[in-house]
Length: 136
Length: 112
Ligand SMILES: Nc1ncnc2c1ncn2[C@@H]1O[C@H](COP(=O)(O)OP(=O)(O)OP(=O)(O)O)[C@@H](O)[C@H]1O
Ligand SMILES: [Mg+2]
Image 1 (cartoon, rainbow over the protein chains, first blue to last red):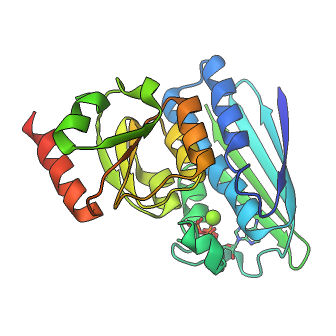
Image 2 (tube, each protein chain N blue to C red):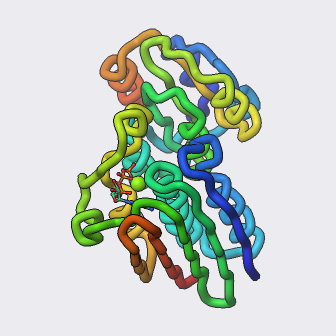
């Protein structure tokens, strides 16, 4: 089963729509509740990162018998130092984004904690691709 | 304890999401950092915050929280209220500061 979503950078009203849909679908499929909670946390953080840091993005969700694979590809500034970005507390979020309560530098660590496999690749000044796998 | 039961005892105002007033409370989480709440809040908790925008309800719904308490009489945005009604997760409001309302809620939930 495949689900596709597109995300507009800067549009915080849309953030969470993909996560909400995926949560419902996984519930219907009878996936373990704890597993759904983890996936929802990771996917929400990935969605918000595109909204907060990039121009636009696309989410592809692939659900198989034993796993869910999420690929989030965006056009944006990219991440120059991925190891640094993974550190809790590191953030380049704008003042406006911080005032909303985002920008604690906890999103990527949340994604790491809540996925079985997280891979990030980036072309500076062009794009970021985040791939996450969770086994049911 | 249900959400409806803390309203009188803490003098809270119900702003929206009335249909969710019989949700059960498992505890509470206090934070204004959204990724902190996303990562650490647990199902059935009351979320005490000063954030008033729509993403608060997106998180409350994704995390299956019991209700949100806005402190210091802060007003929820129009679309936050709409989302709260839709998801049937109440937004409650207090004139107290985070410190005061958290202390009262802590005492109330630990009395049971
Ligand atoms: N899709 C992306 N495109 C460009 N930069 C990104 C992207 N995702 C993350 N980053 C960079 O990595 C940093 C850390 O991301 P992380 O999600 O951990 O924290 P944050 O988004 O700044 O704050 P929080 O997630 O706590 O609201 C960001 O501040 C940003 O510099
Ligand atoms: Mg983030």
